[in-house]
Amino acid sequence: MTNARSSRRPRITRSAVATSAALSVLALGACGTDDNGGGGTGDGDSTLSVTASFYPMAFLAERVGGDHVDVTTLTSPGVDPHDLELSPRQIGALGESDAILYIAGLQPAVDDAIEQSGVEHVAEVMSFVNTAPETEGDDDHDHGGEDHDHADEDDHGHDHGGEDHDHADEDDHGHDHGGDDHDHDHADEDDHGHDGHHHDHDHGDGDPHLWLDPLTFAVAADGVADTLAEADPDNAEDYRKNAADLADELRALDEEFEEGLANRETDTIITTHAAFGYLAERYGLREEAIAGLDPESEPSGARMRELHDVAERDEVTTVFFEVLASDAMAATLAEDLGLETDVLDPVEGITDASRGDDYFAVMRANLEALQKALRTEA
Image (cartoon, rainbow, N blue to C red; front, side, top):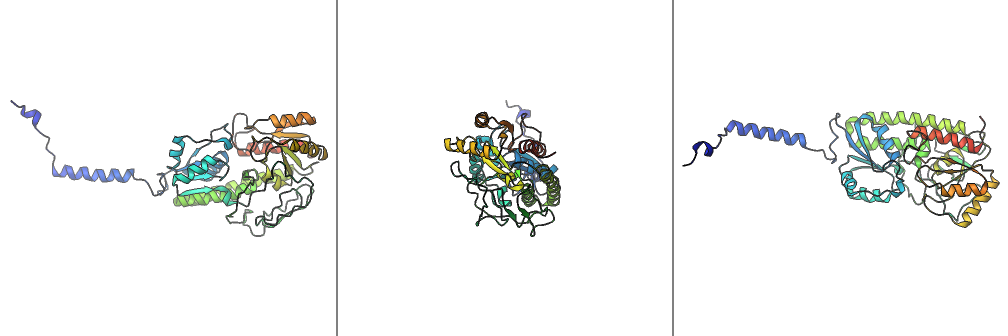
């Protein structure tokens, strides 16, 4: 005999079905994502998911994005960005971003992952600024101090040799870089010293370390603000205000470098790898790198002999090495020449060994190291 109680089905009323359907519609609406694929734009109160390739890009994203962004950095502290390999999990998460910030060519693994990600709002930060300073190979250096005529340079008229720099479209500081003829006339720029344009160019083998020039970094911040504003129009005004505030701080840092590097006894710096082209160009220095753009590349014997001559000729006192790369080459050269060693940080990442806990602190530590090495007047 069947138990009538156990076989009885619960009775569902028509009104209950209608209520359930309505709740389902509301739930679907609440769980839906926007067209950007990251879930975080469109209502002013939500958070934009931003992925940055390494520290300088994360710094830009956090400062420009402010409270409106949640920033993930692909390169962990202490990892040389040039050597980054992405895990399958990182590659998968990249596709869920609302926006991505990176520099093309610096990290090939990142370039490949971004190409496959399908993310709409991607900021290739180098595209926001002028053409990168050219970096020559180990065996093709011009050290004679002649005038460098770069006929095919960017529209800023940059001369990358450290001598006659006619920066026709640069900032309005009118800077004089320690005895060289540097005429900075930024006639076409806005009130912040920016030219207001995004420049297309071929990166080639140029130096990607744009953030080491504070004024160029300020231009990049404007471009990042534009990208975040496109991804999150409701907060566009905040992004642009944050970028303007950051630009003010970067201009103040530029003034510190201008004043701090005046009245120096030499213009030459010897570095482990060619990371400081932007900094050298901005302040009229001449960078002599032991290796090229790759910090792990081995210099030729001819290059090492050449650096001996450079150090003697230009009365160099210091060979600079970096926090995230081996100091073996710098130490060897310094020992051979009886020179000191010191840190000049390309600010590619912040670790416990860094001389500061953020971009500004490390850059000011770099300024102190340069002042000592170049023998500036107090």
